[in-house]
Amino acid sequence: MKVIVTRPLAEAQTWVAQLQAKGLDAIALPLIEIAAAKDSQVVANARDNASHYAAIMFVSSNAVRLFYMKNQAVVGVNIAYSAINNIALSDQSIKTPRYWATGPGTAKALLAAGIAAHLIDAPANDAAQFDSEALWERVRGQVKAGDRVLIVRGTTQQGSVDNQTLMNGRPWLADQLTNAGVQVDTVVSYERRAPVFNAEQMAWIAEASCDGSVWLFSSSEAIDNLHNAAKQIDWSKAKAIATHPRIAQAARRVGFGVVCESRPLLSDVVTSIESLV
Image (tube, rainbow, N blue to C red; front, side):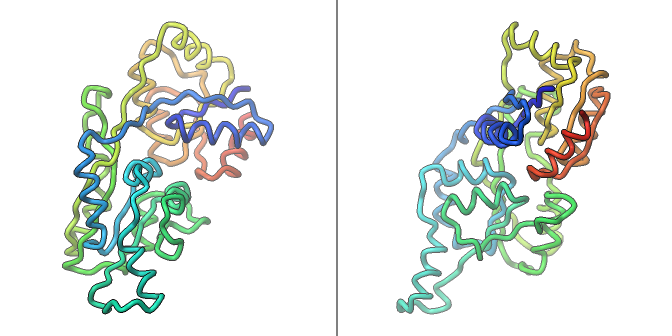
């Protein structure tokens, strides 16, 4: 039984290695391609002005990676460390933002980017879901009316999917912040694109739709990209593991016969895969 990991390439390779270490026959089939945002200067400006915000929220590990792509120093963090070391800075000159992550993968990417662990907020490891709702429950007390929050996100290349509402993603967290009187700014640090498959790859996908393979989905957009590329395929015999209820709904919508919901932690995904054997 193959396990098909559909995350973007860099993440997929990590997951394939982890699943293979657990004795599973995992293979990568990225259903979303990631590229840097076209306007790198806008990203650089947002990065340089981090200290203007009470918090910076990252929607994914890719948002973090492309935001800090050139390994720029985090100004706010460095100022905070200088203050701790008793350098002559007044409290009024220091404004270190909180760094919000939607889940453990995003939090890990922030650590890799040089953000100190004590500045990062994310849903608890035992949270039922890793999403904006779970994050908001953890951080809602950190901001007040008049604060500014920056949301770092991706965008979908126009025309790569049928559902163009994916261009802006889910506005739920931004709505909560706005309702609380918080000014919300956004910056696009990366672009998502649908892959293009050749005839050999399409034949492989068709075979994997009915040979008992388990498809591991961490994005509704990935499912949309697969469906748009292979609308002729009947998915009624296919098995899927979805790492969020909304992703599970998307898999059922395109016709996957068996859909199992799982938290996106490795141990939970492995348990879910084994339950489908």
